Length: 187
Image 1: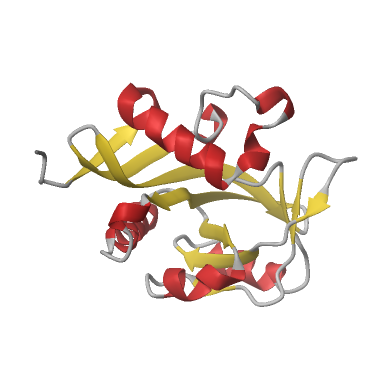
Image 2: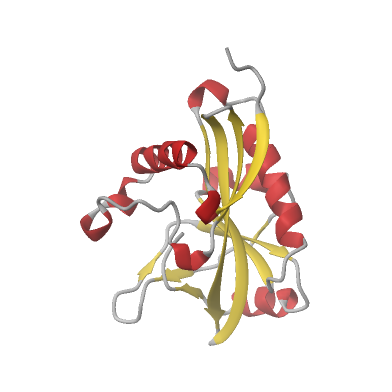
């Protein structure tokens, strides 16, 4: 019986199929809206254009906990910003309450802080703000997230958290107080 739980990192195209299948299964159950219409049979965790980088804990081929860091461009007041964001954070029920996701978020923070993004951003439900705040993410109170392409946008129900990582972070945060964050899609 496998008892060692190991930390692993993978570029998207190197994520082992056995682990990818488990991530996709979990995502299909937890976020079913992402697997409807033309995405009903999608075989990617986050769109490849977002350059997903996977951080995870696994016991051999059994996934314990997973997180992706994606890189994309958003705009605030028509100014473009390169952002990195943790997404697809999950821990299988048998391993919850043991700190696996918290350790992945800490590893993601270190990677994002060392990266080339203008700012770190994170969207989540209000009930998760305290969890992410423990890792240094700051709530952007009252921030509005507008997602979608022009002509078919929607306002997200999620809250926005940020992390200062580059010299443009302060301008991003200041502008966010007056203007919505615009993203091509929610991630």
